[in-house]
Length: 214
Image (cartoon, rainbow, N blue to C red):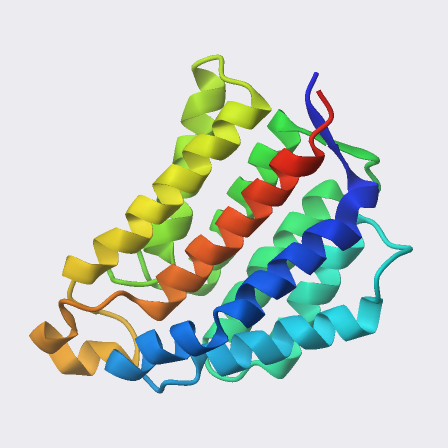
C-alpha cells in the first residue's frame, strides 16, 4: 500500500512555502491585469509567517496544514484569506491524529477542501476563480482511484487536471469579485487565484510523490 507519513509535514510545508514565494511576483503580475495586484504579496506573506511559526521540524502534516490555514485566515485580506484558510484547515481536520495518509484518505482531504471552499464562496466552475482549478483536480483524483489507479497515478491525474483547470480561466469572463467589473475585458488573462491553486496542488502532489512509501 502506498502512503504518506504525516511526520513529513515539515517537508511538505516547506515545498508549499517555497513554491508560493518563488512565484510571488508572477502571481501579483497576473492579479494586476484584472485585480488588485497584491495576490502574490499577500500569499507569500501568509505562507512565510506560517513557516516562521512552525520552524523546520517537530510537527505533523495536520499541524502544518492547520497552522497554514489559520495564518492565511488571519493575515491575508480580502476573500482569499478565508478561502485558502478554510481549504487548508479542512484538509488538516481530515488527517488529524493519523500517522499515515493513504490514497483514500488524501482523496477525503481533497474533497473536504473542495467542500469548504464551496460552502464559503458562491463561485462555481466557469466563474474564473480558484474553483476552476480545485474542482477538476479533486474530481480527477477521485476518478483515477475509482478506476483502480494507485495513489501515485491519482496524484499525477490531479496535477494534470489542476493545470488544465488553471489554463481554462484564460478564456473565461470573470463573474466573481473585482475582475467581474471588467466584463469581457477579463477574458484573455489567467485568474491569479486559479493559478495559485494550481501551484499549491502541484507542489503538494510533487512533494508527496517524493516521500511516498511504496
